[in-house]
Length: 68
Image (cartoon, rainbow, N blue to C red; front, side):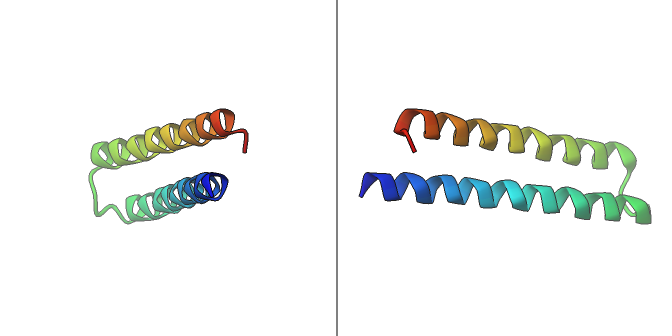
């Protein structure tokens, strides 16, 4: 039971990382239209990268601690 829950948790984190990656693509496309100021765009892309690193670290830590 616990192993399944941990695997599901890791799966959800991986989905979130993929969503963040897709978000960065959309942000870059929005940036190409010029409809958002460059400084704001850079901040949003930077934040999405930071969130991806946090989620990636969470996946790594969870896998290490659970042996999954």
